[in-house]
Length: 568
Ligand SMILES: [Ca+2]
Image (tube, rainbow, N blue to C red; front, side, top):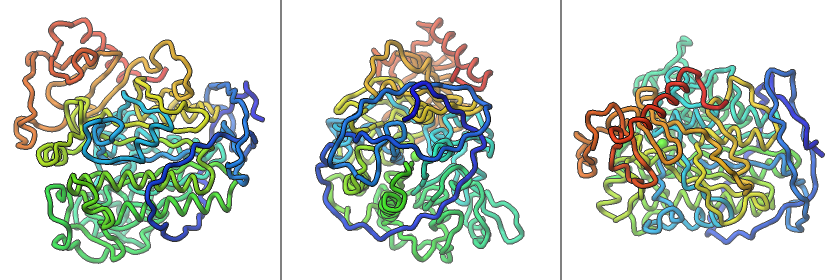
């Protein structure tokens, strides 16, 4: 049994590439009510890669009571110190898109709602950035994107190079070093490197760039180079960008050969953001999320069968519900809220199927499931869903994707861990997706090397339902669309945007956003100060009324920029 006072340091993480066998397509099935399972009592140790010390020790104490359960998988011993972890990251899913976050939602999300009743639902959780790439960097590293070169960029096409420096220890590397199997299925979007026949790297965003790729070469800087044993997915947004082909590991086995024929794709207000790129013959833009689901389910089944004693980390990263909203055939017309409603419904189905697979394998009680989104809902989505379906994916917040107002980055965040995270609870603890890193590190009792996870705080006490006297985070940082140029800071009820405007979209010129433009009540102030407790809609800029708060928050922000970190 793990010593309650032992501490472990993490160094010399090496990529331990393993080959996982993949299975067949799972049959469709309706969402079913999953029985709650409790923990089993058996403890075990898996091999741990430990090196010499270049880190300080967290020395976290664990004290989980043991209890048995007849339904748990006898092949997978339960260890509260090394549970399996499944992180499901949706794309562009708003706070108001999920039923348990929005009683006025028009879209059924029964599986997400059920996940929330079985675990903890965070009401003040945030994506570190208001767009895809930096948020995903932050989830994998525990650091804000603006701290690294190009950390405000969003990749498309060939997409890269990787934002993650090779010396950085990522979340999957942390887990790999602790003996976990690690797998990533779906959209990567943190950057990687393709090369042409002459060996030159390709990082331009165009059809011509994608055509230049030498597909016989290994792809560099992708998930396999950052801690994942297994990857199947796409470089950037699967159905948006110039490259429509699946990466398997570090190769594209079936390269694209023809230009996408957009004439055969659905036409509706949510079908834009789809470029006439270069497409592979096996790449069906309407079935992408079911393909990713198939891969994740196959991994779960194969791993549980072949390595039942090894804990795993599965990062399932969906296309849904980024535009274009191309739900699979099985979901077309299944809601009364149009193609985007159907797409959200498909996302919910994917979550339900992953839950069902954990149940079928009888490993749900030893698996932490986390669900969140990488930023708020997209502009055309918000506009048309409000106009045509009376559904508000940003409700109740101001702002949308790219904006530093709450709608751009306050996201759903649900965590389930039977027997450990109290069921049917909500938490208003201020948290960010950067915090997943430190939370997992504390869970594993591993220390975080000093130059890593600079903006990460462990939420484990909150997840365990412990009374927390003070906020875990001293403050929260946000970044808008262009990295360091648009920063915001939150402390308690106060939120300060160190800029005028949204930090992303131009409301004065964008016809879909003009109806939602609000007057700035302090146009001469350098930034915007809001009291979220009394003004959650961020309608009144209090910069001139409360200059001392502005000064304090700006000072904290400056200090964090100067030190390069917010974690002590
Ligand atoms: Ca996104």
